[in-house]
Length: 345
Image: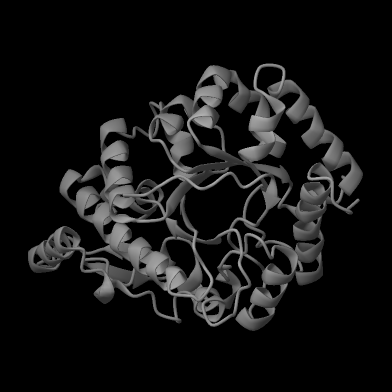
C-alpha cells in the first residue's frame, strides 16, 4: 500500500519528458539541477517507443503499432494474456513487467547513477485513463470503454509501476520513492463529450496504489475535478499552477484537508512551453508563486503550505532546445532556493 511522503519542504523537481536524445546527458542535468529530488527523465525524441502511452505498452494484450499509432487487435485471442496479468497482479509478480531500455532509456541510465542521500527519487508511468482513451480497437473505440480491458490495463500499469519502484528502492542510500501517474486525460472528468466513469477511474487508481510500497502521485496538466483527485488520497498532486491555479483554488477546503492529512502539492509554476517561458523572468515567476502562496496562506498556515509543497515546471519539457530546457529547470530550482531561504535569484 502506497504511503505519503515526508514533508518535502518546497524542494524542486521536474515532471517527465526532456528534449534530449542522449540519456547520459539528460540524467547529468536532472541530477545537477535537482539533487534532492531527482527524477528519471523520459526522452520521447529518441523514438516512438519512448513517447507517452507507447513507453508502457510492452506487455499490452493485443498490441499493434500501425502507422505510428498504438492499437489493440480485439480479434486476437487475448484471454490467456489477460488472465496472466490478473494472476501476476494477485501474486505481486512484477518481475516479468520489467521496463526495457528500448522503452525507457532515461530510466535505465538513471538507475545506474550513485545518489547521495536524496530526499526521494521520482519516476512516472502513463495513467490508465490516458492510456485507455488514446489506444483504440479496430472500430476506433477507446479500449477504456471496455470495462474488462480497462480493469486489466490498470493492473498491467500497476505491475510496471511496481517494477520501476523496486528498481529505485534498490539503489544504495535511497529510502523514499515517488511514482507519478501521468493523467492528462483526467481533464475530461465530468465531460458529456468524453464520458469517463469515475468508479472505473477510482478502481484503477487503487489497483496501482495498492501494489506500491512507496509514495504515489498524480499529474494532470489541465483543469479537472480536483475534489475527486483529492479524494483518491495521492501522496502528491502535480498540476500546471502557471495556467490553472485559479480553478485549482476553487477547491480550497479540499486542499486544506488534503495538506493537513499529509498530502503534497507540486506547484507547476514555471511554464514548460518555452514560448510562454520566454515572456517571463525568474523574478516574475517567483513573484507569481509568492502571490499564490499569499492567497493560499490566508486560510492555510504558512508552515503547512511550505512544508507540503514542491516546485516544478508546469509539465514535461519536450518542445524546447536542450539549453532552453536547462533554463526552465534551473528556474524552478532557483524559485525553490529563494522560498527556502537559500541563495538563488
